[in-house]
Length: 238
Image (cartoon, rainbow, N blue to C red; front, side, top):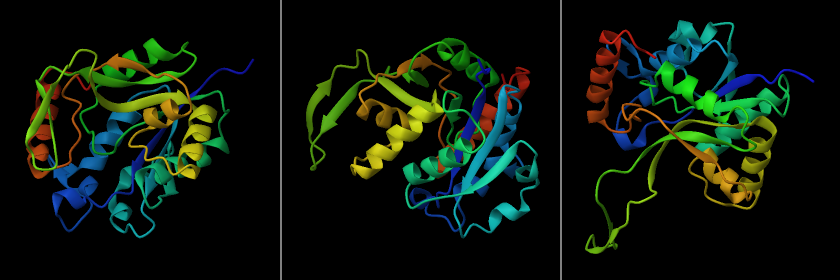
């Protein structure tokens, strides 16, 4: 029986519309280097990953200045119209070199604060699971539901609610088939776990650190910078 291996896909074909900026957010600087470098350095520091497929927009010219993208463990792929198309493209590239039973970790390029200890914990918790799962953190805030007029209609019971994060870890073949089916069926999938759920399977939530934030707005850059600095002082990108 072949040894099960681990791979990663990093969708990085977004253009940062919500940040209203001239360049894709993955090329914005945090502590002197582009966000994408922070993220990839964290993943490259995880020795179990055989290769990382970074999915870029076909018209992306900024990546040419990123030396790290020439690393032997990194392979580039072309992105699609939406994030889920880009992820599927990355999975197709992996199927040419990996076994369908291998694990793949899909990680947002805009999460540069992922800790090595969270990667270790995710793999430790899921490596024998039949489906897989994702990092997340339990919801602790009070959650309100409002209508289109922003008037509160109810307070939602937060028991059992989680903030979904990445990486999200599933068997390569299973995730490829689930993503492909969701796209063919025109199901809006906002993450890999929702595609797995649509296929009838149940992913597992694995608790990670809350500082694994996603940079989506300008203020998140400063927060990510603060977390990276704090982690370095703890001698922990782990």
